Image (cartoon, rainbow, N blue to C red; front, top):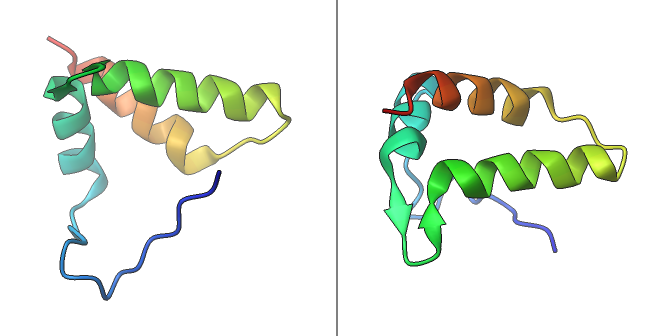
Length: 67
C-alpha cells in the first residue's frame, strides 16, 4: 500500500517537522499511540530494504518528546 500526499487538498496540514514530532509523540487513536504506528512503519520499511531518512529523523524527534 502506498499513500500519496496531495498538498493541494484542503485537509493537508502543512506543518514543520518539529510540530509533526510533537503531535506524533502525544497522539493516540483507537489502535494505540501514534508513536507506535510510526515505529512499526519505520521498522517495516527497513525490513524491506527501504531507508527513509525523513521518517527516521521524524521518529527520532518524536521518541525524544514522548512523555
